[in-house]
Amino acid sequence: MALFTDSGIVGLDDLTQFESGLVQVSSTHGIDINTKIKLALDEIGAKVLLFLLRAGRSDHQWSSRAKLGLTNVVVTPALYKWICSDALAKTFAEAYNVQLNTRFQGKWTEYQKQADAASEIVFASGIGVVFDPLARPAMPTLQTSQGTLRAQSVFVQTAWTGILGQESAPSPINGVNLTGFTGLEVTMSEPHADNPQKAIGWSVYASNSQQGLTRQNLDPIPFGSSWTVPATGLISGLTSLGGQLPSYFVPANRRWLRG
Image 1 (spheres, rainbow, N blue to C red):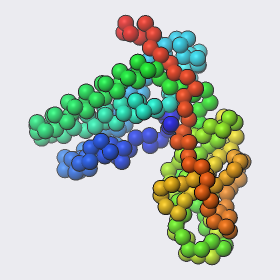
Image 2: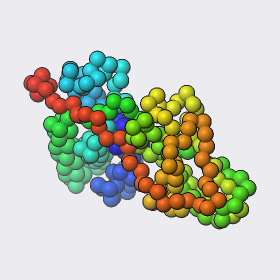
Image 3: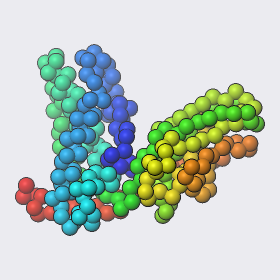
Image 4: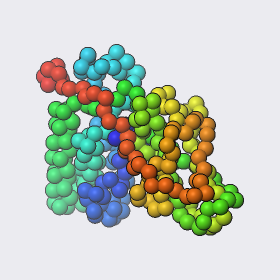
């Protein structure tokens, strides 16, 4: 699972899973979907942070919560659904205000109900938190050179690795078309100073298509090192863990329930 502060935790592709006609609606009525997503993240983030600040010792990291903010909050499925539904509700609210179309009003109302239901589940089940957050890395850098690889397409993403084997959410995918007799080197885009404090290295996932990327390294790749596609080509390794699971959940306490 991604962290709340990771980049790209929700994008247009995520919303179109729920609403296939979203692109047409947004383009026809001049609605900026990214703005709606940011508004949803800002509002939900403020509510989640307030919840954690009011949780007291129910949050095992309560003494440093003001400093940590949302950097170690995990985007659980319920929280993901809340963000998506809220962004969609905001989109159709604007579409309705532009057109006064009752169909848009219906969608606005429905997605707002879904957002409210998801938020209740999030707070009732507790906010998922990790002790050692690993931020999602940026898109990896690919550099070609002379080599022995045959002509092929290669798609790559990376993830930070922690001491217990946990991994960050995978980076965005980068890809390249090799023309033959080529070598391919992969490096992390972050400077060494930007490496997560709790990371001990990184992993690389690759495939000849944008689906089914698998891990190519057995042990974490050290900071500052690159990874080169071997002459034997890519292997079929493990799939990405998809991010970190919560170390614990912060439940609602009576003070929160009383408002």
